[in-house]
Image 1 (cartoon, helix red, strand yellow):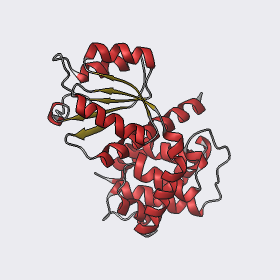
Image 2: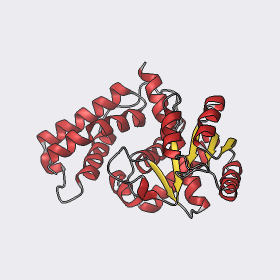
Image 3: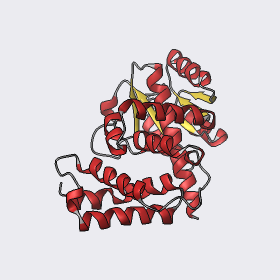
Image 4: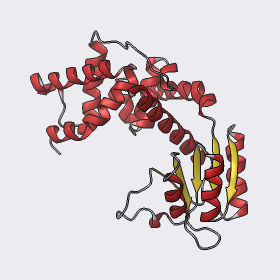
Length: 259
């Protein structure tokens, strides 16, 4: 992919990142503009031997750090409560999806420092990421295991359901903030269909937990953002729930600030 194509593809994501990082859409857009101007005037700043998306964010950070631009208006949101170093590290690794080595390269710091910033950020925001959770799972032992993991993290399980019809009814009743869903349910109905019906009237992040990931990863429909394969490790479930809630709430805060 050429640099131009990379910029066109990644620009909406870089603008989102800049807005959340700086706390202001106008300041974020100005920082992105400065980055693009530098790339036009001094293309040698961009190392074409590196992955283009990583390099775009690295150049953005170099320009923004040296710029006089600073946050003007910090909107409500989880990220606004964090120091800038922790905010950068958490955004890059959690919302933007960069690996630890990639994020460390973007910020120009050691990996150990990056991990320390992420750990500090997680500790700071954990109490803000508790949620009411609906579990759609027809195997009682697995359902109770998931409930135990969720309650140990401070979440409230507002229902455990075994069929598509039960799931839709319960979601309409309790309006969960997060959904954990299996695919194959007790009466032969589908967790995929249950989630589709729920999302038609209620917005919530969904994590599929299934022994049959190939039924979702078909390339023929919108594939899930969050997918855990059975058997699962509790740490994997906990980390995915944390990420799903953080991303959903930050996007909600951004949408509210835009109106």
